[in-house]
Image 1: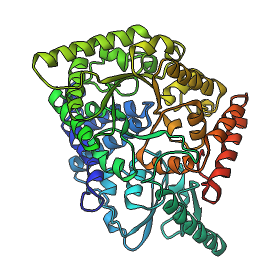
Image 2: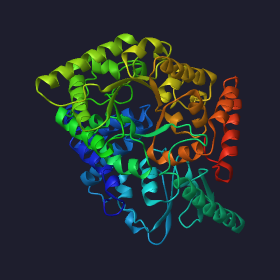
Image 3: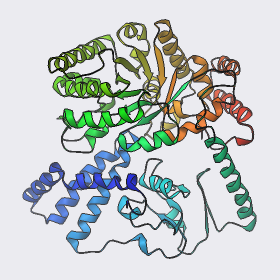
Image 4: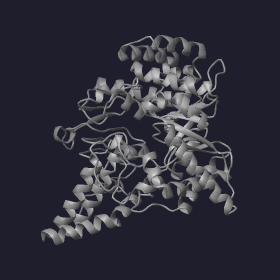
Length: 524
C-alpha cells in the first residue's frame, strides 16, 4: 500500500496488525472454543462479531468506522482458515469506477492508482476507508448510497459527482457536457482557494483570527504544513491509546507530543488530555461494566481523575514536550469548578515530580478548559479564574444542549448548529472569556464550516481549529468579508427563532461574499 498510495495510507494497516496481536481477541476466541466446542473458524467469527457490533454502536464517527478494520481482519483470517483466496481489485483491467458494498483497507491496498476513476459504496461515511483512499487517489467518491450494488451492473456507464453526492447511471450527452464544464469550474475554484494558503487569515478591514488544525498524531504533520495551519488547536491524544491493547508509557507519549511540538515551533500546540470513555472504549481501558448512557457516564476528565497515576503520567509527558515549543494543556468534559481544580492539583503534582528529577518543562504552561457541557457554559465565570483559555467543543455542546443523539436516525435531523440556544450559548461563553481576559477557540465541526465563520468571528472567537484540508476554504471567505458586515449578520442571526431562517441568512451571506467561487455543497 505504501508503494501504491503512500506511507500515510499504509499506516492504516498498522491497526490491522494490532488487531491480530490483541490479547483480548485471541483469549476470548480460545475461551469460546472451550465453552462451545465449536470449530475455531466459528469461534473466531463469533468473537470478532462482538467487537464489530460494539464499534458499530459508537457515537464517534471515526471510531465507528474502525469496525471496518476489525471486519476486514476477521474476513482475511477466515479466508486463511477456510482455505479460500480473497478477491483482489488488482485485476480490474482498464479504467473503472469501483462499486462495492464497502471498501476495506485490504481491498484498497490492491487498487491501481491509474485504473480507478471513481468510487461508489452502499455503506460508509466521510471518515470511511473508501473516502480516505479516494482522497489519496484524488478521485471522486460517493458513499452511503445503500443500494448501488443492486442497481448497477458491470459494464454500466456511471458518472460520480463527489460534490453533490450523486451517482448518475448512463448519463446523457447533455449531462456529460454539463459536468465537463462543472469539472473545469471546480478545478478553477480549487486553485483560487488554495492560492490564499500562504496569506494571513484576516478580513478586508484587518480583523485577525487564528486558523489552527485538529490532529491525532505526528502522521498529520505534512497536512498541517501543506494547508498553512497556524499550529494545532486540538491534539487528540486518545489516538495513542485506542490503537493498542495497553496504555502507552510516559516516554512513548512524550516522543509523540515532542515530534509535533518541535516540528511546529514557535506555533502553539494545544494538547487535549485523555478523552476516553463514551464511545472510545476498549476492554483494556479499565472499563469494567456496560453503561446505559455512556455519553453521560464515566468518560474523559472523570476517567482521568479516578485514575490519577495514568493522568499524571500523561501530564508529565505533555510538560516535558513543552520544553521544545509552545504547548498548551486542555482538559475535556469539564462540568464544573471542582473537576478543574482537581485536574490542576494533579498538574501541580506532575510539575513537582519533574522538578525533583530536574527535568525541563515550561513552568508557565497555559491551561485551558473545554466547554462542551451546558453546566460548564453557564458557570464559565467560575471556571475562568482557574484557566488561561476556553475551547468550545461544539459537537458535544450541541448534542447536550439539544438532547440529540447525532447517530440516531430518528432524531439526527434535530442536531442543529443554527439553533438559537446553541448560538446564544457560544456568544455567552466567548463574552465571559473576554470579561476575564481569556481567549476562546472553537474546535468542533462549526469551526470548520465556512457558513458559521463570520458569526464566530463577530462574536469574538480568537481561534478556529479544524481539519487541515478545510483551512483554505475558511481563510478564503475570511479574506473576502469585513468585520462590520459579519457583526451586522450576527445581529440578524441572533434575532431568529427558526434555525431554517438562520441558515438562509448564513447561506445568503456566504454566496454574496464568495461570489463566483461559491460552492453549492457548503453547509449541506
